[in-house]
Length: 339
Image 1 (cartoon, rainbow, N blue to C red):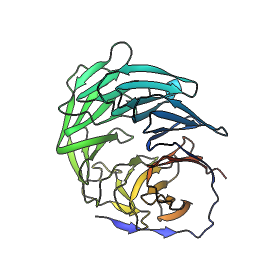
Image 2 (cartoon, one colour):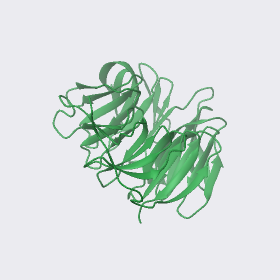
Image 3 (cartoon, one colour):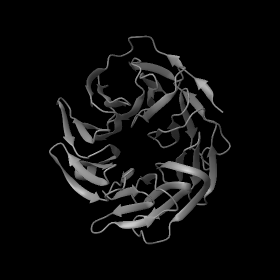
Image 4 (cartoon, rainbow, N blue to C red):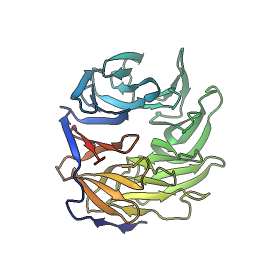
């Protein structure tokens, strides 16, 4: 399926300045909110790592935080937990948004307009002011994602993905079907394609205008991390020894093409993120290493050596000058790449 491309730059190619913390609990989420790196943990706390500031931590949930999304239009993040609570938070405090006792808030998405979607069991809830609008799905609403305009909400569930008109949520959703369990979902930046992460060792894609299917299989392990390139032409995913990169540059997306591998170093990639403006990938590995990979030739720049704790998430800030890293065990780092 994949053609391996890898080349390691000699050390020291670059010296990245880093600040490191430990959450004191397993890491469960990582996003940027303006110049603050925000992380969540399994103990119900949210942590804000601001520029040149110490870590500010707030206890939000009675159990684990299961979902995290940035809401930059309101200068806050939104969290969901296994205590059934949906909470908005800033470094200064928090505001409860929703409470469903006895339920788990497992998925959150926030549109560019600030509309919030929440997955609770089979219900996908849209919060747009007033009472939430409830869209019942065929099975658990496991993954949520808005398109770039915030006009359409995609909901991943067993049997495929449902597309909901966010402006008119009472309309019947468009169903994109494919057998199996779909647990995460993402739109291409141009809005022409939608791709789901399956509970199997595969992704699945659809061309939205006609529902054409795109099977994206052949992974040696389960892909869990997705990221679109700055120009929207490439989709990178974890789940293999190296990032698995699919081309969406043509009319048919990856149909009839094979993926290529970038950043292979004999260890599974567990998290990745495209740089917001340059053709580079940040790659986190199962052994705790982090590398910067140049897409042109697969050259690898070491950012963090293996520490034995799998990388849970990596994320660039909006300008690509800082990189955030969170391990499964709760080690949080903020790297300054602007030197």
